[in-house]
Image (cartoon, rainbow, N blue to C red):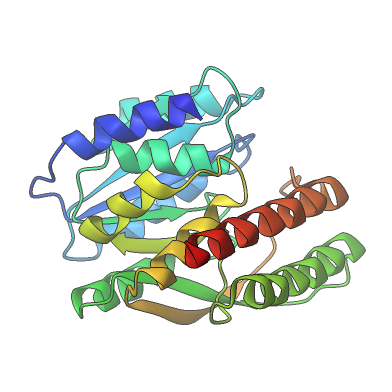
Length: 257
């Protein structure tokens, strides 16, 4: 957590320049699709009016993810990286990348592109209209794979639990494609405590509590059958539940004081 705060404090001191969009890509064991999918992001963004940068944050991968990132960075401009020396969690990776971002719009995207990068221009348009946070509300295309079905079912339970425990609107908080106005995001990052998967729940709850303008856009979520998931359904699910209870209790205590 201290490392997360270090990266974040560095980011908050820096001011945005003329960069329109910063895309933070948290990485862990992504060697199989990293180069191809980065090319796809560049193809899409180069067709828009926006200037942009990509910030890779590798969370101590043990495969060749770091080498692939350096390969991309050498071949392309507008690419930067952060390499964690220890595994800190997805939330810490997103916060670290946002911490050095230069764009007036800052987003994060899962590099497996199970939510297509083609949605990014539509999200940015909604930010230009005055929304503070815009995300893809995933429409899952169900397959016959039992693991995928279980994960999708667990996701539905998770969204319901978040709504019941925290009293927030039903939002696809775990969506791997979210974009923020810079001035809305940085204060939220200062208040988040969760370094791992619960980061998304916490930051979106804080966005709601702070009356930020939140917009969801429907988009398809298509499983990448070639990707080996790093999610441990039971272990990670139990950890999410404990974090949800903890955060709910903290919110109730703050309301009562």
